[in-house]
Amino acid sequence: RPAMIPATTAPSNARAAFNQKGQWKIVAFASSNYLGITKAWYDRLTDLGYTEHVVAAMDDQIFAALAQLGYRVEDHVVSPSEKPEPGEPVKGWGRHLWKLWRYRLAYVNRQTQMGRSVFLVDVDTMWNRKVELKDMFDGTPEDAATDVFFSQGTVYPHDAFDAWGFVGCMGSVAFRATPRTSALLKAAMEDCKEGACDDQVAMNGALLRKYGIQWNRNTGLGEGALAKPVAARLKVTDPNAVGIKVRMWPKPFAFRSFMKDVKKVETASLGADGGAGGVCLGQVEPASLGEAPITTGPKGAVVDYARPFIVAPLLDKDGEKKLEAWNKFQRFCFVIQTPEYRRTALPSPLAPASTTTTPAGPAALPN
Image (cartoon, rainbow, N blue to C red; front, side):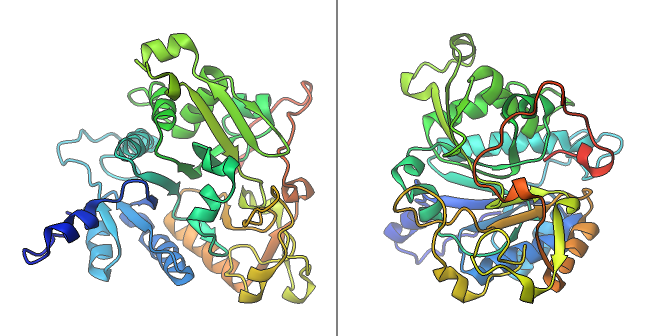
């Protein structure tokens, strides 16, 4: 349902309107049972000054509601002929939303193949401040050469967590349009089987087993190469496409964890250093903090990775509960309580005796 260009528009303007190759877009998939939190997310980014964000509508109801409000929205409504499954949270998207996770990987792959870079986020992400996309993705030579940027998840999937001490989260992840990114997406999609796909499991598994990625825990950069048998199977023949360079953002910068890892404080007790303990999670920062000295990152960096940028408390997949949490974070001031989650270096794996177990409750959910 793309907007039509008027017949009076000059051809050169029409080409400019559709020629977005090389640009970034911020994309969040959402369905009508998440309408409230989707509107809060979209309005926050608009208020911060972003113009690159768009909602990928999963059903007719949310598409119609957002289009009426004048929001940027893409039509990703599944065909009515899509075979329904028992217990689908959203009609047509599969039990446990496995079709959504597979579709998102395919969508990003198509976008990057067309030259469009995608910052894929969940609609429950609360943005503290505006970080210019050019600064985040091209602010240093290292970032400009990076293909994929991940936020850190919790402990899922467990095989990656046990190997690395952290996992990449698909709730805030950015894919630069490169042949290397496309090869990685294909490697992940290969593991998305009918009826059982989890994009976070597939992506971390691909980096772990198919690329053998090695991490620099101080810089957060990881590099690997697609195994030759996998490259042959996926028909990746371009020698420039077999490598991959990934950045894992520091935990406080894109913070996703459980409520036990945050604490409520009085605003007057906030630290004055502008770091992870100096701002209220999920609230728009005062303008004065935009001039706070940068405390981390390579020389010349323009992004402070020690200060929270995106916050997403891990909750049940329920639109009303997520909106309730959003409002709670706006009324009260929460800061990161768990000390290791304030650090910017990547954590190390646990000792072999401390194997990962699935905590009770919401920890069993993806991301």
